[in-house]
Amino acid sequence: MSFPGSWIPRRLLRVLASGTTDGSFLQIVRANYRDKAASQSLTCYLRTPFATQFLRERSWVSFRTPESDSLLYQFPKYVSTEVENSEARDQHPMKAAKVVFVLGGPGSGKGTQCALIVEHFGFTHLSAGDLLRAEIKSGSQNGAMIQSMIKEGKIVPSEVTVKLLQKAMLSSDNDKFLIDGFPRNEENRSAFELITGIRPEFILFFECSEKEMEKRVLGRNEGRIDDNIETIKKRFKVFIDSGLPVLKHYDSLGKLRKINGDRMKEEVFESVRPLFTAFAKKD
Ligand SMILES: Nc1ncnc2c1ncn2[C@@H]1O[C@H](COP(=O)(O)OP(=O)(O)OP(=O)(O)O)[C@@H](O)[C@H]1O
Ligand SMILES: Nc1ccn([C@H]2C[C@H](O)[C@@H](COP(=O)(O)O)O2)c(=O)n1
Image (cartoon, rainbow, N blue to C red):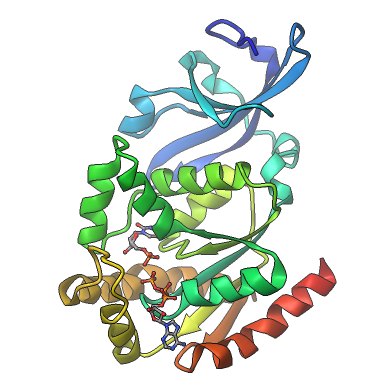
């Protein structure tokens, strides 16, 4: 596969979405380029005009081809002036994906219930926390920053987390995703909606007492740097301060499904099951 030099003709670019996250202007542009020699179409995404330092320094496009995973490609900045085009946004390839967000405090049982949903209903489970931990392990340039945020119980900047989720979704053959531990705050929520164009089907929320969550997390024994009493207290506070506004938002849209997570896991799943049975019928 050959690439079109260092530029793509402007007429091939279409703006899919634009908006503001955390004071940063963000645009997503799609370019369709047909490589005549290889007879292949490429779809690429450009975030611009680089309001964050990361994007200011690195203008990039992510190419995805049938043969390769996404790869980064330098791109000139002048293409950033296109106007928003909602018609084009409707053609976003990820919009067809069905997403259920799975929320709850640390140790409320999100991961445990996701495993059961995957087994019974064929969803792909994407845990934002797992993706971030994998990013630390991979030795990426964001690794140290992510590690220190997780140790402090803080929320990693949305552009990092959404990019990981988007990459995982694009490389999956499935179109049904459980996104666990996301969105953790309003910035997460708006960045995801803006970048992917996806609105969740519903939000599964596990309610659980702090006493029970603390007991579970301290007993988990997976060697996580944040499963200690000091970080757990911070995570509880972040969950209340940043997570509740997200729950309120989805509640106002009638999308919040509350589950009592303070029971045995089999009992909890019996409350979860009907939601997915109904979803499967509708789908
Ligand atoms: N209903 C339950 N009763 C008792 N223990 C449970 C229950 N559900 C999960 N656990 C256990 O509690 C621990 C935390 O569960 P899990 O990892 O599923 O929570 P989580 O909400 O995904 O946590 P985190 O957000 O911290 O990743 C695990 O050791 C798990 O086996
Ligand atoms: N949307 C997210 C999800 C997770 N993180 C960070 C901060 C969390 O404390 C940590 C562990 O997540 P968990 O495995 O408990 O879901 O990962 C984040 O910053 N943003």
